[in-house]
Image (cartoon, rainbow, N blue to C red; front, side, top):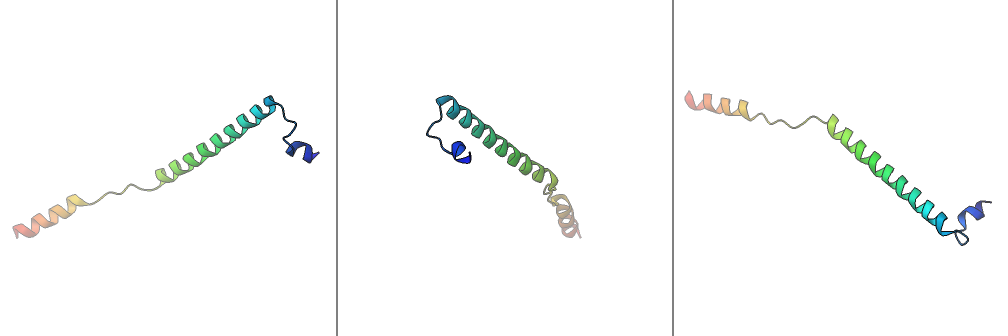
Length: 65
């Protein structure tokens, strides 16, 4: 029975079309899930915030004194 499913010699064009559409849908879902995972990972990571203002204030105080 498994050999009948694996053997593609007797498939009709409609069966080929159905299988190709199903493979496309599965691949699209996998890509969508992977993109969502990377999006959630990016959302969890805190954004880089340089402390430039504080450094500028410290330098200005040192120059004044």
